[in-house]
Length: 102
Image 1 (cartoon, one colour):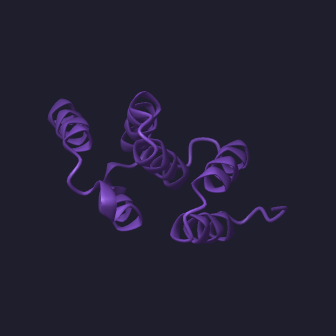
Image 2 (tube, helix red, strand yellow):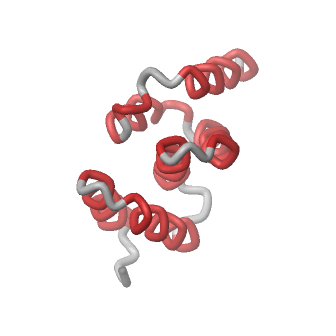
């Protein structure tokens, strides 16, 4: 993608995830992270991909980054990754983050 609009990248990543192409989605996310450093949407998507592929260490790393940038996006995270709604590790990370934030 040579487009520098975040929405274009996110739409493409959503499509890749929906068709089950997680490897290409991950590669696209990593490229997007270079164009949009510190963007909460990219960090949430990276967290979701890593948790979905059972890479919990990187999932946690990116989820904490995402929460630090914008903790109000959690519901959108769950919409993008409904399969992670029951993940206790993710719930623990979010709860701990919210506890420490307050």
